[in-house]
Image (tube, rainbow, N blue to C red):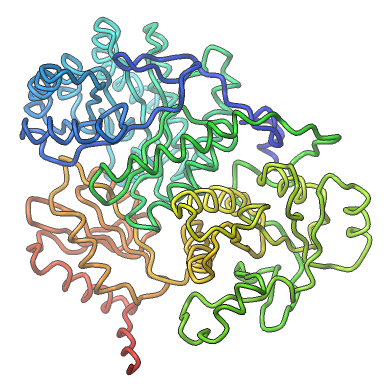
Length: 596
């Protein structure tokens, strides 16, 4: 809690208030200020394929994308942005184009001639990432900063001259050796990396930039953005630059949507975020409905008048560092809830009755306890007398009562702040159970993930109950998948998979499907699937194994951050990945399906 006593990322943890930021223009689209939360995405084809780039951009715009990013890995790619932009404008499309730059300042300089915005990654731009251990003296560190200033200044001057915006986008997976050696592989290192570049821009009186702090781990991502906003506030009121949100390498399908909703939704819930991108290992048009739903979810919060509270206690959790709330363990039938037990999944009695005849067929999605049978006390967290009575009595399971007029995260934060820490808390996704079999599942998924996931990432919660989904089997699957995505209960193989882009060296969607088919039974094993090396080793820091594009149709295999197999033909690479998993003792044979 020490850091949280000195820093604040949100003016009020119990009342929604969108963070006030300055407006930055990306072409004709305003980001921040009084503008709505903007939705953006990235095309996946080769940037040198002009017609495909134009068509994919038009396809994104048609489904509601407001800003489109295109990779420019080389000067040649950057130069072709001129023809892509000209082709779009000739068809009457004025969507802002963002050039995605990583390793080559020269490509950034070329791209800035043609686009409305340039994204630079401080960890890759004029800096090194070779995982070298170097003890920098203060003088050596300053020399490196001066070298970066020399490389970065021409781009800033060109953007300032042409009215081009910029995103200073730090990725957890690509922090430079210099940052890693001074700050470690931490949210603090991510923030410092971005602030170094921002100070150079400000010294040159350039302010048309936004920040991002992306990571594949929602906890890291949430902590980094919170720390960034807190640091910006301490720097001064004129540091109120807009924030771009995203969970990088979220994956595909339900898992990718849940992980994105946990990270992005958690920050939106506290008023942070001016533009968002949902990164899925799917065709990028599928990202837009998810991003739009999250933006609408946040806008709906802004429309609601705040609920007055008699008291707003100081948080009992550290917003800048994960630690699970300390509770005592209680036994409920076959379930142990609280303490060091994994977070349990509950179900309502009525839903349990619907599936009780087929529990043995639910596999990993069996409920741990029935809500009505667990002796759970439901309270209004504003009722100090009720909370006082609980704190004076024996340890029990506690949750927020249904039907209250409180925002859900506010309600559980109040409960966690007031309730004696020994009492385990049962989280809910909504305080109004759904009985509508036709409710749109995407909205249920995003709401449950953003609400429950946000609280789990703050260390609050010992059990969860999803009641916003009417179908019992689907609500149980959603419950377990939220726990997996939040890193709270690993019950299946965990995948970190990046979205496609023009840098990708193999077909990510089909490859991800083949890797999943071969490894989906390896519970607890984490596998990273990366189209190129840009964020590969760093985002694989907590992965067991990595499958990374090293060259066209050639794959490099990693154990953690370390590349161990090189230039494997793509046709053999999945089988070689399985062999690597065997070599390291993590392989088990898939169970034989039971006879019908």
